[in-house]
Image 1 (cartoon, rainbow over the protein chains, first blue to last red):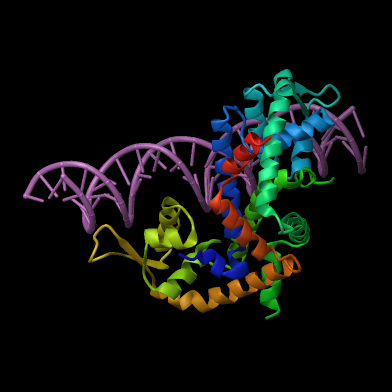
Image 2: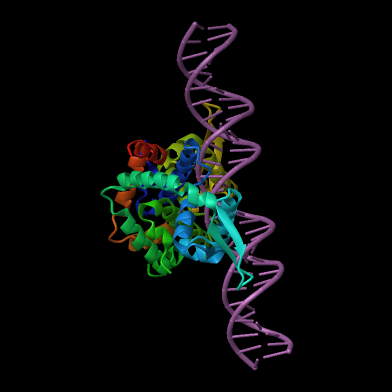
Length: 159
Length: 159
DNA sequence: TATATTTATGTAGTCAACTACATAAATGAT
DNA sequence: ATCATTTATGTAGTTGACTACATAAATATA
């Protein structure tokens, strides 16, 4: 049975992106469970970011990883609850809450890194020969400048 | 501020796909609202499919568009409620429910088609020069054969 | 024919993202 | 110094996908 979203050409773009992302996310969850690790897909972005930056506020994380701040709050709250992040009120600016990696996080990091390296190797294999990372950058940039809605309405008016 | 998911290379793949898909979906909703059309992003896949196939069951739609059947039930129920689909119990097999486009759907189709054509033109512009549709096909195929979890665990064992 | 299996649909609950709104602290302007 | 604006965080509610389980009809098998 041929996939219909594929038949739709560029119109099927969004649905196909979402389908792939969802499938990877679900399979990622399953993977961590199978490996007996109590972390979730996407946490690695925060792990990696805080490893590099040491200490960041909610909004800073939100800006750097491109998720809305409520999503970051939910995500990091889970990581705090799981014992991987420490949350401290900022001295200079009492609105801010600064997040750092806990000792548990530092301890587990080598094991996580091993898994992430394997995951990355798997993805590299799956996307081999496609230039998709470069394509995503370009597409992100273009949709960043002018969204889908604006583009469509512009085209509608020029018809 | 440089995007951190991009810095992560292939590891940021899933998150970036999800982010783009979510942004397109949200902007699509906004667009339909702005145009005063009472339809949702993704409905066009069902509209187009039923225009081509006339009458299909829930499972057939699910198979063709690659969404899980509960998602199709939710999606098509909304379309029925909005008056765009007719649902009929199948005579030969009373388990099946057959979905067709309503008169309202047929009537509105030319207007929808105009919008979808504009949307597609916008996407084509945004992805120009990237070969992303071809890339997605290849990636879907590869992850279809062997998922992210399986790939990662295989890599872990070969380290 | 009776029973077991498969298939089609439906329901319940989860999840990760989003927007919109609320509040409190810091900053800027008159 | 007061008041307005901006910024940081938090909460509530929505969304569209998913899995897991439930039920009923059809089909296959003993």
